[in-house]
Image 1: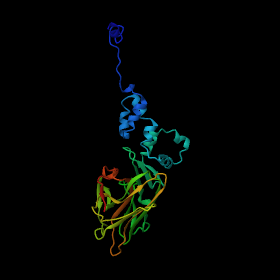
Image 2: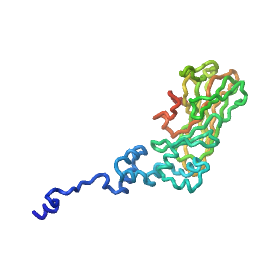
Image 3: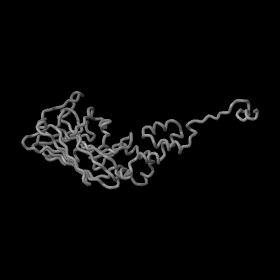
Image 4: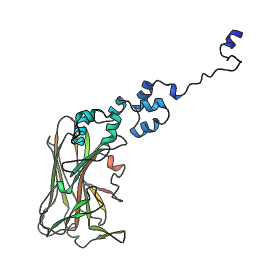
Length: 299
């Protein structure tokens, strides 16, 4: 018994310190646990200890959070950056990079990953859309505004034929997506630091609904109708959903917004952009900090 007691006692009879903590866990085991956490939780766990910090930087942890075709997105986001410079980034840095807005197509389009879980999102400016009559200043104008991520919107004063078309050919990460038009009835501006909205040109939208149409290169099609309403608010109008099965195959999407009943004129609408989000994601939160009030309208 004396021998047994002496084995756990120090030279002066004090108990030796055999306590273990989080820092004693193998880094590989910690990383295996972090695989099951969302990116914000991984970053919070990295503050627990040096071991957790090392595990939270492991490439295989972040590769699981990135889309399967993340290298395509990196190529698109990198612009003129050389492959050697790009290869120096660890995958945690790649994830952070892709979570920032990444412009392409001359700055008229941008994509990003949602930092909470890596969902792919895209925004297409009104300047990248084909708008009938956009060059005729009697009907349309591009007006600057801080309420758009592109700092400009297309404003319609009046027209008989309202048609907005667009398309995007892209290697989307696999998943189901929803497409929205971001519209605003009335012309917003600021006076003495306060937001005001002019309804001077708003007319014709309560007579007949607009039509939204969405089609994909693999045969998916959807058509919906909706009245434009609620002047003074930016609203996301749901045009339809589409499914991407293979991220290594390019998907071409064509979409349109029309009201071509020439029995009456219509006007007073701002066309900001087209947005593509993972289906159901926009129901949980607003990703548009410039828009204080976001509402979804579908068929």
